[in-house]
Image 1 (spheres, rainbow, N blue to C red):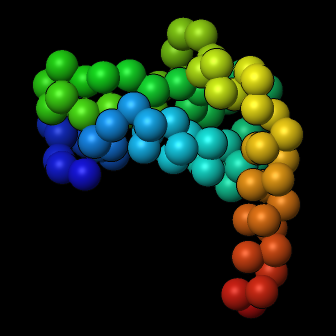
Image 2: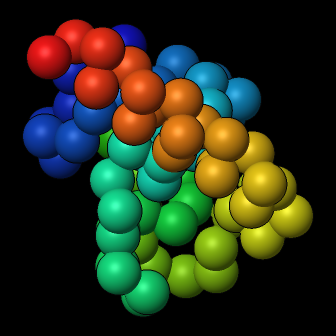
Image 3: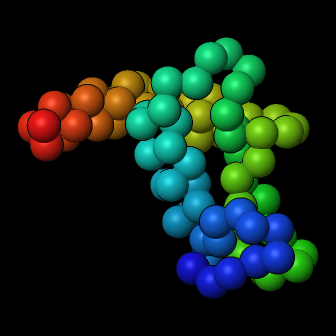
Length: 82
């Protein structure tokens, strides 16, 4: 991950960015219509960033069970860290 003048986190590939998006959605309990919903290729740094605009990622539409499993795993990880 390199830097970008947008000050957003940079992901080197779409696959890495989408995985990070899934992890982000699992960790943060966003209200409906809130938070990042997709990734895009930045023309400034040539890396991928999250966006909260546009259409939700196909992964978010089709893999809701995975987000639920990641959310539960994140809950237990946080609980055991305390």
